Image 1 (tube, rainbow, N blue to C red):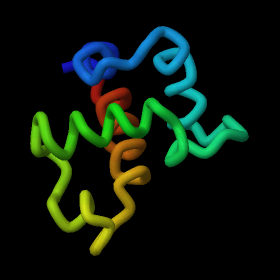
Image 2 (image 1 turned 120 degrees about the horizontal axis):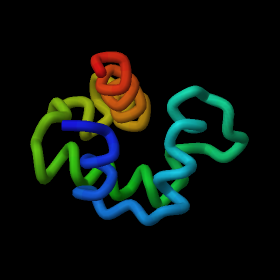
Image 3 (image 1 turned 90 degrees about the horizontal axis):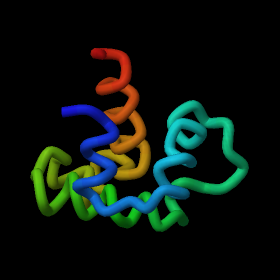
Image 4 (image 1 turned 180 degrees about the horizontal axis):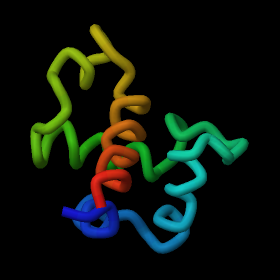
Amino acid sequence: MTTQEIYIKAGLDNQEIKSMPYYIEGNLDDDFFDSTAYEKLYEYFAFVTYEMPYGTAKARDGDPDIWILDRLEELNESR
């Protein structure tokens, strides 16, 4: 699955999709954690696909925002 397909399935709008490469590369002043894109992608990875480990989703053994950005970066690199 491509990142574009994930964005659509997670319900990101066009502006959120345009912002994602900047979040992934760390080149955006806004905090990803406080964005609506984060909320939608968190719901998608934690409760739709269950890809995110439970401990990370609960922020017990990892940061969910970092996990999401790392996962999307991995998908981009594998293409």
